[in-house]
Amino acid sequence: HRKRTFSAQKNTTITNKNHSSRILYPRPKSLLPEMMNADMDAVDAKNQVELEEKTRLINQVLELQHTLEDLSARVDAVKEENLKLKSENQVLGQYIENLMSVSSVFQTTDTKSKRK
Image 1 (cartoon, rainbow, N blue to C red):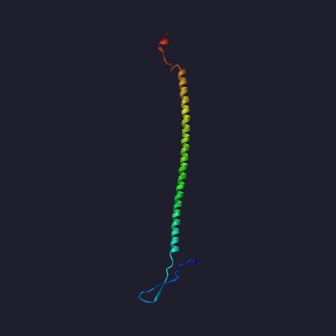
Image 2 (cartoon, helix red, strand yellow; image 1 turned 90 degrees about the vertical axis):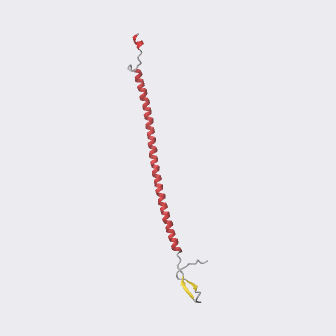
Image 3 (cartoon, helix red, strand yellow; image 1 turned 30 degrees about the vertical axis):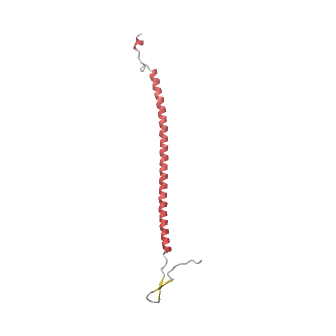
């Protein structure tokens, strides 16, 4: 099978109804390849825009992931510090209770027992 191509060199015959003579008009050059090229350029431009948008979104996701990792690490550090401080507070509370129990200043005074 032979592929048909249209070009400006071929002529189209059109018969004039008023005259029996034939008039030859040049066949217009096909615009299909140019239209296809324009369509491909539009598709390429659209693909480029989509690619840039995807790249921007991927970068934004990566940045947010890093931010989340940093915040998560900070939360872990704060939790650890909180547990450490709670433990220190318990030790200090016990120390204060021990000091109060040993010190005569904080002993309850029983006036009847002192008088005897």
